[in-house]
Length: 248
Ligand SMILES: Nc1ncnc2c1ncn2[C@@H]1O[C@H](COP(=O)(O)OP(=O)(O)O)[C@@H](O)[C@H]1O
Ligand SMILES: [Mg+2]
Image (cartoon, rainbow, N blue to C red; front, side):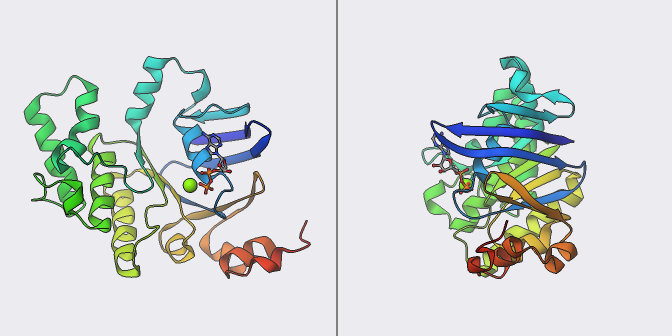
């Protein structure tokens, strides 16, 4: 389980997360929605310890992330696959080497085991046969899939996705959404998916949380989200931010 309690994070005088409390239950897929710049990526980075909160508690499987020592943090990151926005592949490395990166970092896996896991991960995202290609030779959707393969290769318990479908056309978005669902089912991973694509959120999530003005404004099932009368949430899902005007 991932638990955030009263998390605060500011950059200089700009308070991004004011008081964030959120739970990610084992086995669920939680979508986090919210306007651009509200701190969704910051939230994700505090979970893996890439950013330190100024106050509050961030726990993964009971361990307080900001308090972890370096070695413990590496161990934690092995349990958490992170799918970066824009895939973040290394252009000078082949698909194989990009996917193998996290496995090599573990330091104890034999080359044939690494190869087995890379092959398995690429098969899961339907990218088998692309091992020798370079990122520049791939489409946007293919790059996202390789990024996903890299995240699942270490067989994590958690998968965190930062805007996995941003910039993709609707057909490719559907393909990525299906893969996210497939990973959740086949690998039994717990997933947090940051998105501002409401179609995706409704399609993949067990629960949807909205981050707004430094707090979690709303959490609920897709049905509850669709039915909420909160003008802020309604304004977001209907693409009519003016609905939130004057809302408390
Ligand atoms: N490392 C950083 N240093 C300074 N400001 C940052 C840093 N990371 C994020 N921010 C700021 O925090 C705010 C939220 O950013 P982000 O989490 O990326 O938003 P989004 O919800 O679009 O993912 C933005 O105003 C951004 O400029
Ligand atoms: Mg972001």
